[in-house]
Every structure is written in C-alpha cells, then in structure tokens.
Image 1: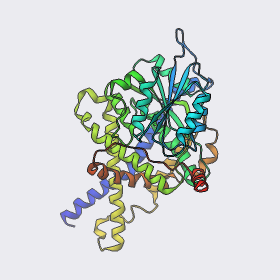
Image 2 (image 1 turned 180 degrees about the horizontal axis):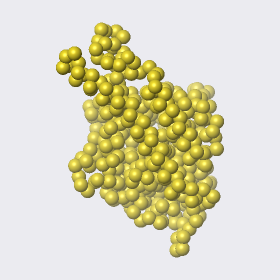
Image 3 (image 1 turned 180 degrees about the vertical axis):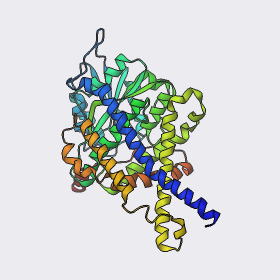
Length: 433
C-alpha cells in the first residue's frame, strides 16, 4: 500500500467518524441540556396559568407589533388573537409593508372598531427589519412583542415573556415557543416533530449552556431600550432574528427562551416552499457567521465562542457529508474504489441503527417536554421518524448551497417575499385566482 493510500484511508476514516459522531454527540448534548432546563425553569410553573408576581412587581404596558406583507388571508385572525390577549395594558401596532393584496384595507377596517389597534402603512416594501423598526419607534411602551402576520398568539403569552423583563434588567429579548398549526400533510406533520425535537430542544439546551443562537422571528419579546442601543434590526440581513440576537448578546445583553410563550403558526407544505424557506434560514445563518466570526479573537466575547464553534462545526459537517455522498456515487460510475476503504458509508448498517435510535429517543424526550403545552404531539410521533430522511438532507444541501451564495452575493436590502403558508393557503389562492 502506497503512502497516498495510507494517508487517504486515515482521512476517510476521520471524515466518516466525524459524519457519524458529530450528530450523535450534539443530540446527546441537546437532550441533557433540555432536560436540565426543564427541571430548572419549566417544572416549577407547570400548574400556573400566568407566572405569579413577586412583592413589588406589577404588569407594565406592552406594545404588540405585527409586521405584515400580503397577509390578507391571515391577518384578520392574527389581529383578533393579538387584541384578545389576557393582559391588563397593551396596544397592537400593525405595520403594512407595501402589501399588494387587501392587507391594508383589512387592517384599516379593524382599526376603526378597535381603539387599541394602530395601523402603520409603508408605501413600498421595505422588509421585515424596517417594519419592526417602524413599529418600535411608534410604540408607547418599553416592552415590545413581535409576531408574524399569520401567527395566533396565546392569551397568556405576554405574561410569560414580560416576567423575564421585570425580574431581570439584563434581559433584552425573550423568544417564545412556536407551534405548527397546519398538520394535514406529511410535510406539516414532520415539521411538528422538528419544532419540538430540534428547535425547542436546541433552545432549551443553549439556554442551559448560556447563550441562544437565535430568537424565533415569529414570536419574540424585546426591551426597546436594548434594541435602540444596538441600532435596531439590520435591513440587509436575510434573517433579522438571528442578527438581532447576536447584536444584543455581543453588547452584553441576555437573551432567553420561554416555552410557555406559545404562538401558533403556518409552515410550508410544498417542497419548493420548504426549500426556499430553509435556504433563506441557512443563508441568514451563514451571513451571521461571517459577520460575527471575529468574536473568536476577542477575549470580551468568550460567552459567544461556543455558539460560533457549533455553527462552524455544523457547516463543516454538512460539507463532509456531501463529500462522502459524492465519493460514494462516483464509485458506482468510475473505477475509484480505492477512494472508499469501507464498503458502504451511506446504506443502512449498524451505525445507521444507532443514529436512528438516538433520533427516536430525542423525539421521545421532546414529546415529553412540549407535550405539556401541545396536546397533539403524541399522534404525530410516527411521522417524526421520517425527519432524518426528509430534513437532514434538506438542511444538509441548503447549508452547502447557502455559503457560496452569501460569499458571492451583492449586499442589498432583504425584502419580503410571499411565503408558502401550507396546503390550505394554496387551495384558497387557486380558488381566488
């Protein structure tokens, strides 16, 4: 065996080991961190409808900001839920960001009947970041709750978010717990599992270890003075929620996760809509990685080293996995078997069984955690087993595609596009057309 073969065999086994052990390690880390978070922060409040006030505390006023773009089919229901929150003092600010449908007309008619609702109209599409900023500048209260134009906020969501602000002056943002409400298609059912076993679990684990990678753009509370301090949301970032999270934490502010702050959302249920959404998320993550990479060289930003390291390792894993898949496919077409010291790195084997087993355990833990707030998780457990096949590969290829697109893209303002809001919404649009 030549020196080349020896070196290549070593590299190959290192890559395969990383491809296998990295997701297994992260899954274990997430589960341990999430369980610790549950016993420390969730279990003591499970019997409470709203968090009990301590001596000297009172509920301050809150401004609920709803940026909208082409939300004519959803905004009436969203505003109704926002105006129906069970909270003593609040206002709702709906920002129409140059919608091309009847969103503005609906908002104006709702405002005529609801004195708590204010409507801001931006003549042209400026993007969600500037829509949020417009609402924040007009808000009369210090605490802001941002929700999307298709989100249905829980009646007690505001209480659970505000709890963190009034007790901890270092808290700048509190992200909520989005739940999927369109569960009729296979993609919708799989996403129910994803938001519990991946999104919710990661946020719990990250809070246990100190910092959050991102708030959820669909439901987050902000301290207005903190947002003002960091220059508000960045209009040139594809994912303004990830960017504002890093800006706040780099400035020394704390960002928290509140699982009792529930909001019900619509998610894509077509492959094209899902690809566009996840590619935007991946590109936003790549933008934030490149923008904040220098934190690794600052002793004042050590609290963010773990998040940046995880982000970089995840990117390396994606490219490593693609490399393994490509070499495996090439081996069927060309006589390059020396590139594959093992027989089959892709087809099911003992390692695959271990990964799938870990995935199922992770799903079971997530069902136990979020089952306290989402009673429909149990019947979706069967569909969660398809997550590795559907979303691992989707997120894998979006991650690999995102980095070069970000590196070579021109810097422009991130404007709204009409998202895929599920099969029901597609049917409604086709009927109207």
